Amino acid sequence: MKSESIHDYILKNERNLGIAGAVGEAWPIVRGQIVSAFLDRLGAEMGKKLKGWQLEPYNTFFTDAYGKFFVWKPSWPEGYSVSLECVKYGQKMVFGLWRDEDMIRKREFYPELLAAVQERFPSARSMAWWEAMVEMHSPAADWREPKVLWRMHKDDEFLDEVSQQLLDFAKACAPIMGKMATQR
Image 1 (spheres, one colour):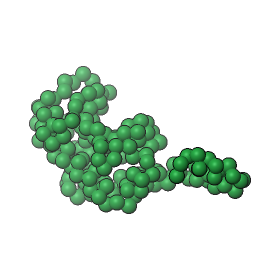
Image 2 (cartoon, one colour):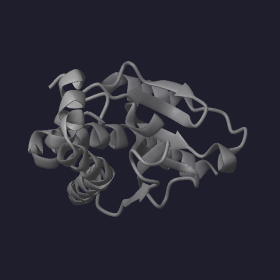
Image 3 (cartoon, rainbow, N blue to C red):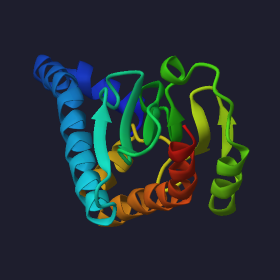
Image 4 (spheres, rainbow, N blue to C red):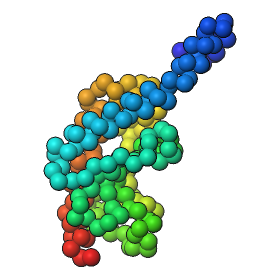
């Protein structure tokens, strides 16, 4: 549908305006339900494959500027976790090894970790708050679009693709994070 035709429909009569208002109020709630159920399924899927790891959502996707889903081993140094992040309210999705700058302070980056991750994810880079970060392009870069939300809601392949990327990333990080834990 083109936005002009939607505008015309809404302004056609009072009933249509009421429908538009109800849809507008329901949209954030429904979107939240979709992402919450997706993150529950993602956590369950990853929990089967990463025994003994911790999984935790942080903030709310689309509502908070930076909603996250964290995965980490309890033995890792404090302040590090694999994260799926909804950046700028979902404008783009990224994943990687998140480093809590407030907790870590000026700790040096680990080039060995970035190199290990780049073997599987060549576009990974280090930056503030990220030991290694990858912009997600597939299954979708922007998760706010209705067609993407529908896939998140109904398409098991969407879940599988996100899960596999996070699992591959976590497995690339785990040995190096284990070494870091013993050095501290």
